[in-house]
Every structure is written in structure tokens, then in C-alpha cells.
Image (tube, rainbow, N blue to C red; front, side, top):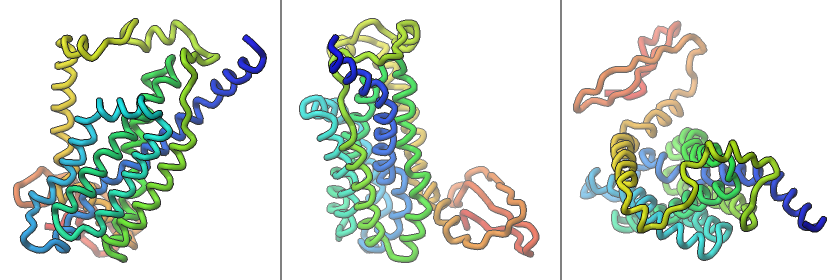
Length: 307
């Protein structure tokens, strides 16, 4: 190996952790369309009028998730065909653009196209692209790399839900969608433009065959036809379906994470004394979840989910 090629490999080896950081940031930038949806449910209902039912509105995140997940093979093909940097940049742009365009939606069908379809394809491209790229950068630590990248997708809403809810209350959902849509697109595109593809047959300098052997579940990759003929694939598919159908409906409820953020945003002057979280069982027709009790203010309790 020549000196120049050796230095190039060394540079790429030391930068793979930076690639993981950029992937993490890109994943954070696309999480809000799915996880902060509940914040916009009521504003959209008021904007579209009484004829728009809650069930019709809740089809929007369903459409986003369907296009994000079930079209993953097609999205992965596009990433392989045109390269991860270009496609992930496009996906991040689409993810932010879905909020900007949905701010101008005047009916439920425009919302389906802008928020559901554009957002679903955009977030799906970024998710699939980042996961695939991180596996290539970390052949010896695939589990760690994909875990960190996937964590970014859920972690982004942790930082955005409360400020977004506050801005909806103070400035309205239209301005909020535009401002945050642009901000998230800019962050995602900048992160994506810093992503690179490792060279063919890349192995990091710290590559340890023993560690890699414990990480890999197979000594070879399977073709699509072989995968579909393996019963383990269907077992994993059913397991993932059961897991997602049990969790995603709660994200779309009007009394989910969006109302938690809303309650925290409105509770501007909490007493610095001890707070107690009272978890109550769900009862039909009643908001469930948490009751926040403050002591020392003569306030018997600040209810996060009011009846």
C-alpha cells in the first residue's frame, strides 16, 4: 500500500465516529413529523372546520408511517443507486418541507399529500440511508452504530416537543410549521452533506475479527429471494408489527406526548418543591397518564391531563 493510500484509509478510519455523529443529527432532524404530530391535531381540526373528523386527521400519521416503513426496500434502492449523501440530503429536505407545505393546507387531502406522503418518503429515505451507511462504517460494531443512529430518531423530539408546543400556543400552528420545518431541513441537510461513503471493502484500523464475529449473525448476506424463503424473516416481521401497532397508536392520541409538552409549556412557574407523579389507570372517556401535584402553594394539584 502506498503512503498516500495508507493516509487516506487512516483519515477515513478516524472520521467514522464523526460520521456517526452526523448520522445521529440527521436522524434527530426528521423525528418531529412523527412524534410531535399530536401538538398539531387540534389546530388542524379548527383550521379545517367541524366537518373534518378526528379519525380523518389521524390517518395522516398513519400514512406517514406506512410510506416510511413499507417503502423501505425502494428507498434503500434509491440510496444505493444515487448515493447516500444526495438521497439523505433530499430526504431531510422533504422532511422539513412537509411541515412548510402542510402549513398552507386548507383541507384534509392537502394535509395527506404534504404531511403524510412527502413526509413519509422523506423520513424513510433518511432513516434507511443512515442505518445502511452506519453499518458500512462500523463493520465491527454494527449493533452499536445502528443503535446510536436509531436513538437519534427518537431523541430529536425530546428537544423539540416543548418549544414547538409553546410556539403553537403563542404564534399559531402555521408559523410554527414554517419556522420549525425550515430549521429542521437546514440541520438535516447540513448533517447529510457531511456524510461520506467508506471505500469498498473498508475495514477500520481497530478492526478485530473476534469482535466482528460476535456482532455478525451470518457469514454471508442473503438475497431478497432467500430472505423471503426463510421463516425467521416472517417471525421477525410479525414481532416488529406487533411491537409497532402497540406503540404507535398512543403517539397519535390527543392525550399523548403532545399534551405532556403542552402542559409543561403552560405550567410556567412550577413550585420548586417536590412534585409527585400519580399514574392512574385508563378509563374510557377520560384523559389518562399523569397528575402533577405541587406542595406548598395551597394548590391541591396541577393536572397534566385535565378531565
